[in-house]
Length: 496
Figure 1 (cartoon, one colour):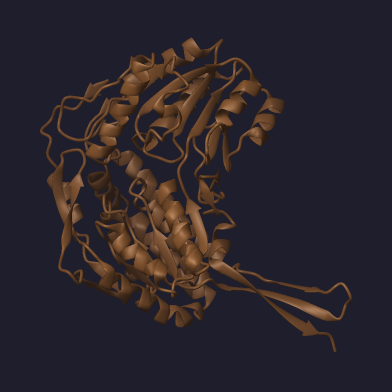
Figure 2 (cartoon, helix red, strand yellow):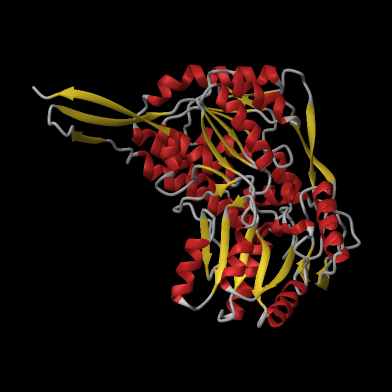
């Protein structure tokens, strides 16, 4: 592993990019300050420097935002689908035109290496293009009752004002994945981005305005204290849907609040992804998949491989090859050329990763590479491979959310499926095998919403993203993504 040694300060180019972002509340098409006048700091996790301050919204701002969304809903729902489609398509084009600037903003506030940030910008933009095409394909149905006496006419209508809450780890894509289908369906929105990474979301707002989104359709309030904004939205009686991506604990609390008004709910929650390598796997391909599934976003992803189950006969070779790959990765500021692994998002995340590694080592795990923090400013952790991990280790039952790959041996298919499913979560699983029958058998047996078969990447705007069990409700993306923002209406028409 190598670590950049240049001066650890935010570049002027990054500061200039950040300075272009409006940092207020955005309500009814207007930027403004929070009612309290308060602001909070945003840090560059690679340098620990303050790079911006953002309006710290509260209940008064939240109330204005949700009332605006409620007032505008009827008019927005009546807009032609083609008009909504073209707004999204123009926004897609604008995002792609500004890919470099948006990527630099993202890297500066969140830490991921610049090439990966550019990849996220393109991924985020694709949700707008995908849902621009879905907007004009909102259909219905007409059938007849069994006795032939009535026509059954089914149409789809917007759910209504939506509460959108996004996490910090994919600050642009998680916004477009929710905003895109809401716009396409004809729903107004109140939106709270994560306070650790609000700048990417705020930059998106101006793009949507430039693309022609009418005032009041999207209302944005950032805050240091999520409950001060989200709770009033949930209790308002105006919001008809909540879409949340984040931890299972917070998701459960939001579901409890949603129940008070019987709100439609989409929850993309935590994960504890198993990554299974069978004895017949192409090991080089499996190592490539493990690097992709583990190291994307420094491991800070709900889809990250959390538990790497490797058949005993190939475990030593796999562990060695994986350690060699991760050990060669360059750790440093994501904005610098040659960086493979950026910082974690904050000090608390760094402390948690170290705690999980220390616990595993204390219970007998062997550090094959990494296992420590580089000696430099910023919230960095070295890419780490642990072998011989005890099943009772904390990192077997908790999301690691860092660049740590625990390798656990297994001997039989039934054994590994049981271990893989022994978790409350069920977002994604990965398996590597060249046996066609086994590939489908194990894919069916895994209690997850998505499976990566001989690949470490599953996310795609054209696919229905989501999980089962404690990993959530509903799906985002794909053909079904827009359905989460639509209600069905049935009209009975007697035949005369």
